[in-house]
View (tube, rainbow, N blue to C red):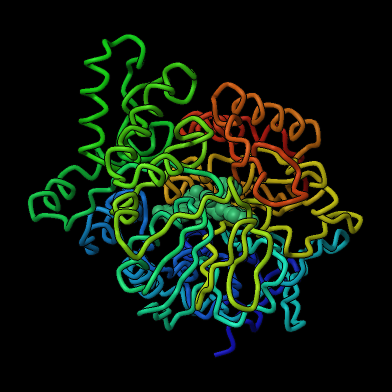
Length: 547
Ligand code: N01
């Protein structure tokens, strides 16, 4: 079946476009939005997906050790009770293959595939003002149209391969973790160099080390990590989760970060040193992202944060046996959790293996890649495989690699030259009827993603429903509302310690030339949800809605 063909099963819509809505991306966001718009609103929808399968992030990120940092019972859709009942997660933190199986199950269960065009990369999208239609053109040059365009392109989907001179001459193989080959990579006995020690690199190191002949980890910025303590879910835990679903969902949708735990309402500075250490030890033993919920002020008070940062540095020094390696790993230049905090399964322990060596790029930066390997200021490391765990052009990257043009042909790239101007992270002035799911200006990556995704999809679907009920055809963020929102996004970030991590991808600092703007909304998911609901209740205040 030609999934790209207009109007399959729905007839030609009255507005003259091929579909009522075009959605870009078939990950968590695009799939749920398709279900909402098609099955609950009765719209004709086409989802365009560059990959040869559904799953978005989880289709591409197949690197060794890839698993989610959100606990499995919270990293899933909650919109369908039946779906919740019939799917059982096997481990505390789900692996990439298990999440991908889940998303494929969702695609089948809700019969989504018939409206998803795979292997279809969107090259450009242009708003035709006279027709009130988005004209979306694929990389192969086919054009489809619809009054509504929704980008569900993910926050971390544009791989960032640093431009290190000489890569093209490297005689071995190289891979970026976010574009991992489906057939996998055999590291057995190989000399492997991994660049990058973010969440991804920290997951990959212990697994690559198991089979590699030798693994050199090239570290530019040292990072904190808390053990995941991953384990199979026991029958009792599974039962507990089943019996407490409503409560879990209530917690996830009423707190700051969308996780199934609340931040403790106590300051790190109001307890004794002994009590603080006891609480940190307890949190360390429990493991996971919950560590940062030990005290309410870890992200707002530097002195409070110092207590956590120092606890974690001491843990690194206690795990890593070689004192020099321990020093380099624990010499961390930013407060804990101001960069996305990783969780791990044996990361620091891996440096106690004979076949793992840490390379300190602060002391001797990479100069170039040679045909044989990586050359730093001090030495050349001969390698068979280079793994780039170097992150993404986050949040704006996936949108800007599409040539999106709004009214008067103005490009999104131009509109965002100084940073991602938007209103509620949902719309950009000058780009009518285009919604951005979990993009800059929304809690997105600061939240457990499925929670942020369901909130955005529901808000967008409700908005379209109300517009149709009133015979309204166009919605566009007002420039002054966007200006205010950008100020609010900046103020929210500045009321935390988050901007203190100078090289963070939250700030776009990891991509040379990218404007330095704190991109996600740090005011908390529950607060953000309340703002979005209030805007809708006030007849979409801040948007120009017209017939
Ligand atoms: O990417 P990152 P990531 N030379 O940008 C280094 C999500 N995620 O893929 O810090 C040398 O965090 C860079 O060094 P520095 C999660 O939200 C989720 O690890 O820039 N090094 C850094 O060490 C996460 O935050 C899960 O100095 C270079 C690393 O590469 C986000 O994805 C799992 C370099 C990049 O770290 C991104 O994580 C994994 C260069 N030229 C990831 N360029 C879940 O569990 C970059 N680096 C859901």
